[in-house]
Every structure is written in C-alpha cells, then in structure tokens.
Image (cartoon, rainbow, N blue to C red; front, side, top):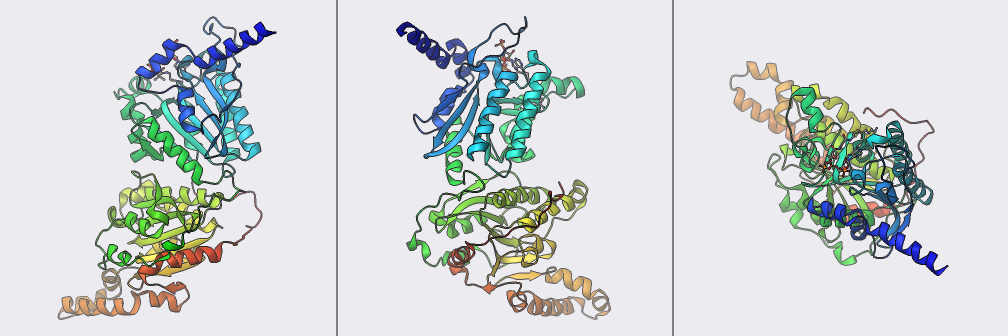
Length: 512
Ligand code: HXC
C-alpha cells in the first residue's frame, strides 16, 4: 500500500511539475506556464484541480505521446474568497492545442461553473484545433461555444489571451464578456500570417495581424490590454472581485462612506461653459464615484465614449459617458456598439446604469453611413430600451437630436433624469436650426449677419436650457453641478428596489 501511495504521489508530482525543457521554452518566450498563471490568478492554496490524469485516447502514429492533462489545467479556486472556475491551456503540451480530451475537460468546468453559478475564466495559450484529431477537435470547440452562449447573461465570462489564439478558437474570447490580452506574447486571428500570404500575397507579422493593440484599439475584440502577464492577471482578479458571481446574486458592496457625501465644487469648473470646449469625462467620473476609483473598459477603442465600472455609496454601477476630449464626444458607429455591449452586460447582471451626457449628435458622413451607423446606433438604442436595471441620466452640457434620445433619455425609459442648469437640450444647435427655419428670411434680409445673430439668440433663449425639458417632465430635476454625486447617490437609493418583469417572448431581434 505504501509503495502504491508513493508511486501515486511520484506520478502526480511529475505531472504537476511538467516537462522541464518544455517549460524552459515557455519561459524563453517570455510567458509563464499554465500553473504559474493560476497561482497568480487565484487565492493562495485555493486551486482544486480536476482531470489531472486525463489523456487523449487517439491511436495514431501522428500522436504517439500521451501526456497527462492533455494540455489544459482545469478546475476551480477562489478570488477574494469567492468561487470561480478556470482552465489554463498549457502550451508546453502539443502547443496547447485542443483535442477531444482537452475539450471535454473544458466542458466539465464550464458545466460546473454554470451549475454552481460561478464566473468562468479561460487562460488561452493554444495553437487551436489539434490537427491530428481532426473533426473531433472541431466538435470540441463547438461544445465550448454552445456552452458559452448558454451561459451568457447567467455567469460572467472572462477570456485571457496569453499566447496564440488561432483559428476558430478566437470565437471563444469573442463570445466572452471581457477579453484581456498581453502585448507581444498574445495574438488572435482566424487565419495566421502564412495563410494570409498564401491567399492574398500580403506579408504580415503575428502582431500586426492580431496583436493586443490591434484588438484593443481597432477590432475591439480585446476589452483590456496589458504590457505583462502579472498586471493582466491582477486586473482579472480585480474585475472578478467587483462583479456579481451570477445574474441572481448581488454584486459585492463596499461599506458606505458618509464622508464622501460632500459637495464637489470642482465639477462645475471641470466642464467648460462653452459647448465646444473639450474636457476629460474621466475627471468628472472620478469626482462622482467612491474614492475616485473606476475601472475603464475598451480604453483605446471607441474613445469618444467611456464605459467603466465604479461604486457610488458602496454600490457597483456601470458608467457610460460621452467623452468630449475625443471627436467632441460625438456618437459614431464604434462608440454606439461599445456602449451597447456594456449596457447589455450591466442589464444582464443587475448593475445600475449612470449615463453622463454631453453629446453633439451622431457623426455625419458617408463613411459612417455606409459602414452602418444606423444599425450600430440602433444597437445602443435597443440595449437601453430593453434595460430594466435602475437607470439615471445626467445631462451635463448638451444633448442634441437622436443622440439625446439614445443616451438614456426619458423617452426610452430612464428612471431619473438630472440636468445641470447650464445645458442645451434640443433637436439641433442654434446655428443649424436658424439656417433651416429662416433660410428664406435670411436670404431676403438687408443685413443677414445681424439678423442671424438675433435669431440665434432668440432660439437659444427659447429652447436651449434645461427648463424647457423640466417644465415638460422630460428632466426630473435641475441640479447644482457640485451636488451631482449626492443626487445620483440619492437616485440609486430610491431605485434600489426597482423590479421589472419584461413581457414573455422567446427573445427580441437586436439589430446586430
Ligand atoms: C497540433 C500543434 C498545433 C495544432 C501547434 N502545435 N499548433 N499541434 N495541432 N493546432 C504544436 C507544434 O507542432 C509544436 O509541436 C508545438 O505545438 C509548439 O508549436 P510551434 O509551432 O513550435 O510554436 P511557435 O513557433 O511558437 O508557433 C505557435 C503557433 C504555430 C503560431 C500557434 O504552432 C501555429 O501556427 N500552429 C497552427 C495554428 C493553426 O493554424 N491552428 C489551427 C487553426 S484552425 P512540437 O512537437 O514540435 O513541440 C482551428 C479551427 C478551430 O483552430 C475551429 C473551431 C470552430
């Protein structure tokens, strides 16, 4: 018995230790091993592994080696004491490629994550479908995708790309709620550089084709991008610890901090009175949320809108804000899509929405129109219209036209609309409106310049102030900018018990 136990322990230790030469190669590539990554990700000593002894059952001359784990370390652990399920692909075994056994292990932890209502975290480092296993590898991927879709909106899903993520494998991060990527070592594409060159003659590096910056700033597939694995995994921990474990559990609260209920006089100074002067919406967010701390997503993609998680009075909120510092905060195709996905996530996981509005309108032009601004703008509209979580809109400076409607206006169901006294809410700006309404009069005028000025001033007095909206119930209150944090916190407290059950239907048809 003792020798059996010793033999067992020896085998176990060997499997866990891995092949030292392969691990050295992994380190030489500037990457950590699967187990080292799990150590950084999970609370110390919390990892419980499943299927350590799993091996492929393929009998083929092309796949003679049968290493245990089959190239993926799977199981469960805790982050800040809360349960999560994880799998980490092990590039040192068959390049982390996915075959039948590898996929079955992943399916197992996904099923456990769903049945226990726990977040799922995937650490990807893989050459994709294991070529020697043919269609069974593809079948394994299909099983991952189907489970991800079934889990969407029920448990949060995190995908962390720390090496190659090639071929159809890239659909897994695309289906996740949050995708993290590490610069230099991570790449993600449907077809690699060799295929690209063979098909089109274009020569391109892994990084140019699907590096972290490409996906963080151009494709939008990566939500967050990091210089190194340690910082990346630290932030995965941070985000997981902020969010609810599933769509039925509340997000963890931090203790309320009464001292933060003071006025914030700097808010009025942060936002210039002139409607076209830029400022950084992040400075406004920092004034509104607990400890000035917020976690921004898609920082380099769709930079004209800001999406961030933060806490107000200890309660987790999703903040959406136009960013006047980039493209004057206009809504374009990418910004609409970015915010739509964020709103959908918050709604699915019962996270109240705070929308900070300072928007000149939708971006005009042939590029936007032909690229589908109508469809993407409709996605944001749809996301807000369907959102049943507490929703608070704060109009800071201006809100024009369709963009006013889309940015969580009263008409599409906001619960509380607050406006600063200085703002402009209207169909369009004074100049544009006067041009449309008084074209003939101006053409006939002896002094068109002076007459235009008069008309612009008249229009501004009549329409461009929040009282016009407040008198009609479209804005619930006009607030002193310095008291915005207090007003939003009071609104969140008022709406905390909000319950809404949408009418039964299979599902709507969001304009994807
Ligand atoms: C089997 C694979 C593999 C794969 C890598 N390996 N990818 N084995 N199936 N898909 C093996 C290599 O043979 C090698 O084995 C070891 O892993 C390390 O790979 P290297 O090529 O030496 O590493 P590196 O130079 O760092 O290049 C990594 C790589 C490259 C860029 C990922 O291996 C590569 O291009 N692989 C193929 C990627 C790909 O096209 N995958 C299929 C995509 S299609 P040895 O024994 O030499 O150490 C797909 C369909 C999914 O995934 C569809 C789902 C719907």
